[in-house]
Length: 118
Image (cartoon, rainbow, N blue to C red; front, side, top):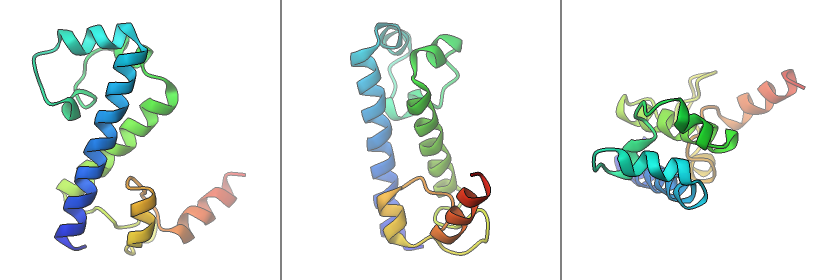
């Protein structure tokens, strides 16, 4: 995958992660206290830290899942596996990654997976 595209997606993922954390801080006083009690860090690193059970309680299930997906995508970028379908090993189209930057499957495999899970 092109380095420029991957770098752009990394920045997008980090921005989405920061947005989720900022939203949680504004909506949840417990989460805000947890974040403020941490050593000063880049907000993009906060969700990856093990900051205790209280953090998971502060996060909604959907936000927790999305943060994990974002962290997973960032990890795949670091190990050179970003944009590769975990099911078939083919490249995930750029258009799909632009729409869902943390996608782990190509459209064909995702569709097949969803049919199996109905």
